[in-house]
Image 1 (tube, one colour):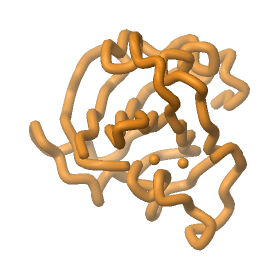
Image 2 (cartoon, helix red, strand yellow; image 1 turned 180 degrees about the vertical axis):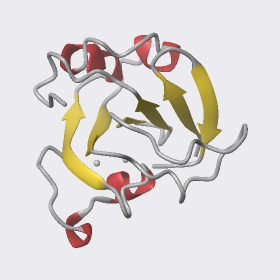
Image 3 (tube, one colour; image 1 turned 90 degrees about the vertical axis):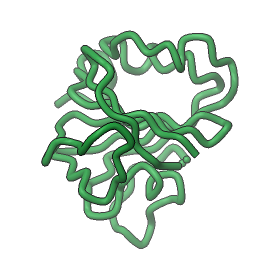
Image 4 (spheres, helix red, strand yellow; image 1 turned 180 degrees about the horizontal axis):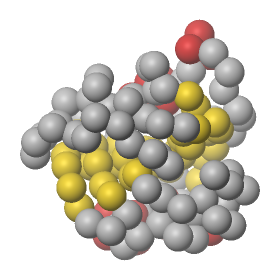
Length: 130
């Protein structure tokens, strides 16, 4: 499965990842497989939820930058919202090494299993304000 790691402003790295269900997550024991695929081990998951269509992600995160991989995807998707700093140490980068720490991270898992990790995503208007 392919995963894309993206800064809101520009494409940065390719990464391997996975998918998730609407609910705040408290402990590692309760993490979904999708959250784990997004790199949740050792990171704080604020919430997970499903989208009817991946292209609807802008309804929840209006400040998410241009993401051609989602813009026309009418298939269901799963979103994982992370709280605080995100440590990408467990991710395998395809186009270089990820930064040591990321902030304001969301992960969108498409129905084909492609995981897209976005960072520096403004939470304004999302219901998950910083």
